[in-house]
Image (cartoon, rainbow, N blue to C red):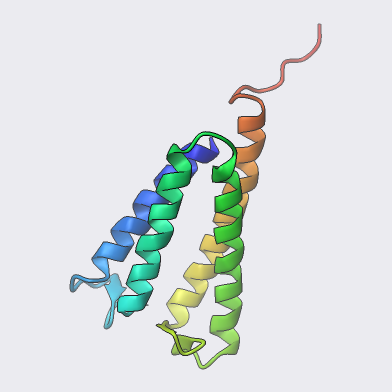
Length: 130
């Protein structure tokens, strides 16, 4: 399950990263979620990492989801305690970004743990003993 979730989130991050370079009301300089070129590139890189771990054999997908989720939780905290216009002066953000980073962090960490449990059992639920 983690590999599927990694693929889904990877596709979403790549799409969001690409959308940031095209004028639209959702992601960009004057959009609901404020991003600049570096922020868009970060979305693309995260998307590619998740796509890679989603296609790779082994247990890298749950770990990637957890690590990226924790990073997003930290970004939300940094966004709230910082200037409110950028994270560490590197990438542009706004209040909507901070909330999105919080939600993404929680969902990605959850997906990493939920996917690991499912993949440990080969995608099958435990059967009661008769």
